[in-house]
Image 1 (tube, helix red, strand yellow):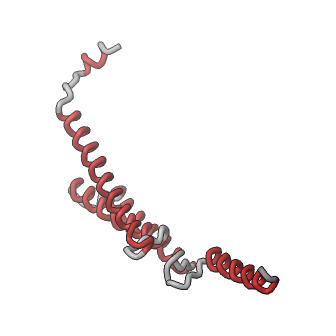
Image 2: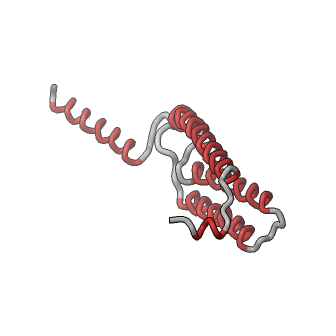
Image 3: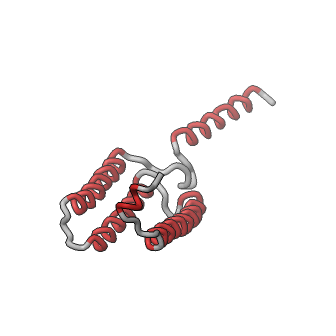
Amino acid sequence: MSAASDTHHDDHDHAVDHRIVHGHDDHGEGMPHVTFKGYMTGFILSVILTAIPFWLVMGRVLPSAKVTIFIVLAFAVVQMLVHMVYFLHLDTRSEGGWNMLALIFTLVLVVITLSGSLWVMYHMNVNMMPMTAQDMRNMP
């Protein structure tokens, strides 16, 4: 190789390294564009999506506990979406759709785990033998 081709090769490597380090990509793929405004939007939405359920539960705003639980769970789902979009930068285009496939698989596992846990805890509570105060005193 000549000295001129070595210089050209080094310049090319530096340009590629610069694009990789700084998230610039010629094809529009790569690292997402991150801004302070995006992070602050996500943070403010997260605070709001935490404060409202907290207020609903602590203030006993709704008369029905089941409705309150449903609303709190809905806020939790929305907050997960906010975190995925604003902080994890996940969307259908990132990584050629593989991130979305991994997310769907994770959600299926979470639903199975949570519903199974709730089912087991409910049935253990229903099928537990009731204890009187006398029974409690006789326990070791």
